[in-house]
Length: 511
Image (tube, rainbow, N blue to C red; front, side, top):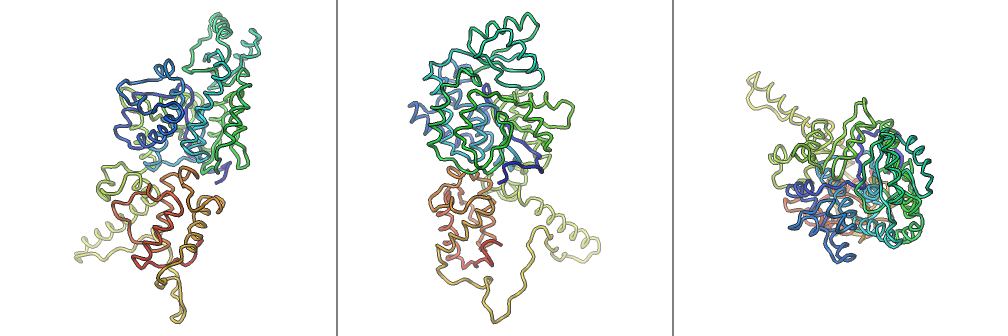
């Protein structure tokens, strides 16, 4: 996976940080999208271990907790809720066939972006978020807050010079008319007072601690030491960092870079401009509220850019619905379930159909158009039933030349008992080349999503390639992708299908 895409960037997914949670929107979306329940079940296992409390019960129980409630009663839960909502939105979008060219996060959202790209497991992502809170609390909680000023970064820095406090800092540069300041609470009171005298508006940010300030420097080493013990995996998608102002690279030690987040500012406006210059035309906010969507609109004012929220309520309606409609209209998501999906494949899971349609829907439509054209011509000439139209070129691979009759070939039935070890090596090569991972990471028991970050959409795509390559029969309607979550299980599944159905060995393992 290229870490720094120089071309082909069209769609960027953005993950929000502090304040990026809308409890009501998340609860409404959960009623229709099973991905939310599945994501939070995984989070529950970790929060129960760390806090003896399930985050799902906090967010979806009888008491309808929202961000303010979480900040007042369960500060750790506010951070896990923001993280979980971002991942859940990402999974919903992926299940609908929406595929980003690049991911980026705002502050805490950068952890979510890295997890979505496979750098850490979902569970370890929760541990990182929790440790981020814990090390700050062990430093005495750092009595401070964050305030958004209606001023440019340059003007804000000049204002801070008047106060002359080393622990005050510009925390985020959101757009030309909004800059967030972080620091000790009493000192920030003076900043707000001075801002008022200069007619500069000030709004407090919903956050449990002041982030991106020199005051957090003592907490960074302990945090880095903790994250260093977690398994770091190769990214399966490019991730751009508004803090580092660059893409993450394969050789990066994420523990060290994430620790730098404690004190370095988020230059969000500059990041959006960079992505726009790289070709991004659609920005989708994967998470709660619609703060980043509004910031993108401010930064790109006048440009032909679409900025789409997800887990937010707009005019009483869940923004996710309109965003999915917009993505479908732009050809960036699969057709809505209940339309073609319900007609063509009523028993196929939504995420499987979405992945299939994203990859091959255009072939299906071309075939239908060809068939209809042949039928129309037949009806016009009165020739009765039309001859079947030839399948369009795009939907099929060129046929290989027939081998000499006397030679054996891969297209002949393979011998019974196809060797598992050989099959495993072939599959490992196929997956490694498709994902641009080293082959040795695909061990028998390694989990594709939890440990390598291969999302369900990509797994469906790869399994389709395997089925085509080995001539496997269509999968039964009860097939569940989650059952085959390791390379070993996929190998056993393919081997069983080959032995049961008399499938054919492929012409080559990598062709």
